[in-house]
Image (cartoon, rainbow, N blue to C red):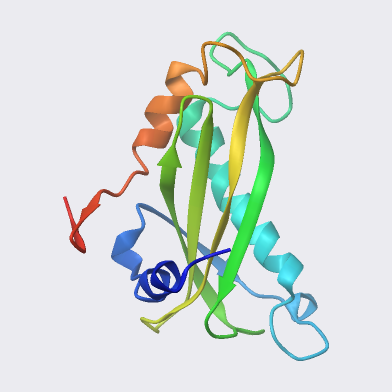
Amino acid sequence: MSSRADLAAKKRRTRSDYIFHQEYRTRWFDNDMYAHLNNTVYAMLFDSIVNSWLIAECGMDPFGKQNSNASKQVGIMVNSYCDYFSSVSYPDVLDLGLRVAKLGSSSVTYEVGVFKQGEEDVKVVGGYTHVFCARETMRPTKAGMEERVRRGLEKLIVREELGSKL
């Protein structure tokens, strides 16, 4: 559960707080019975932007082709979260931003900011934690995550000190 200070900090997020960005065009199907984006759609958005980065920048191979450059690990989700500040709905176009909130030896916590195109206020901040495991055993390794994965994830770290980026 987020503290009030954490929620206030998340609510102040801007696009510049995120390193990698993707656009998502909402679909009629994305709305729920209350005419706003269904909660499950946010989980899909978070998963899509994270996996786009892992495939492009970290050598992850979701289809298991296991070429010589592909990661021998998989990311297993162990936690997820979502804080809602304002709703969006079809036909909104969304700007998604991705950053790494915490990078451990075998785990990473991602943060995704959801912005409505043309608006500066963040609508939703959420994400999840992956633990990187050996593909064969689905267990973490003593060595932690592979170096290529770590280097790719380090590119998404935004360092903040007293409210300003370093």
